[in-house]
Length: 114
Length: 116
Image 1 (cartoon, rainbow over the protein chains, first blue to last red):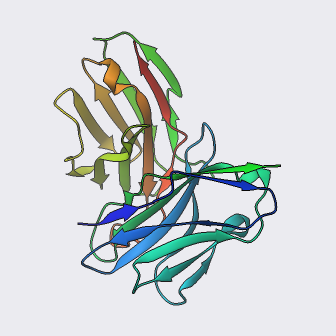
Image 2: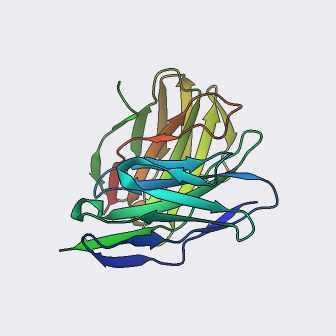
């Protein structure tokens, strides 16, 4: 079985500052990794995903994430955040073969203030 | 293109009443998922279907919950009888192509259920 750990439940940051949201996963098989964002009162939207190839993945809204197999991590970064980035961010994992469900972490709330 | 469509968006009901949540997946998608989101438990997968067949319902909390997918364009999640602890946001999501777990899962905007 797979599991995802998002250690930070909330990350406060000032506008235009860089941010990193941490994600670690556990799996006995190779996986695909995802980051989703949930804006207030909305559903989840895909930010980016890692399937294979380059370990640095770029997504929408200036976000990027780096897959580190040895550390079983997939941290999300943005060099300069905006007020509009205030949202809940979810890391998720699924095995890369077969028909498997997507397992989500508990989420990290990013709070961007002026 | 229309995304995943859920109804109702908001529902307030009294304990003991039956609740039916509806979902229309993205056209052409053959996998459908029902998730529940609460502050205490986060995002939980309740059940998922592939080609209208339930594949894994191990996340369904108890017999009060049931889900159906009578055709490729419609699914329901029913709670009968409802209880206050069922209050949550229920998300429907869909994905295309069974053999590609890397394909993106697309979420609806959720049904916000409050049981009083």
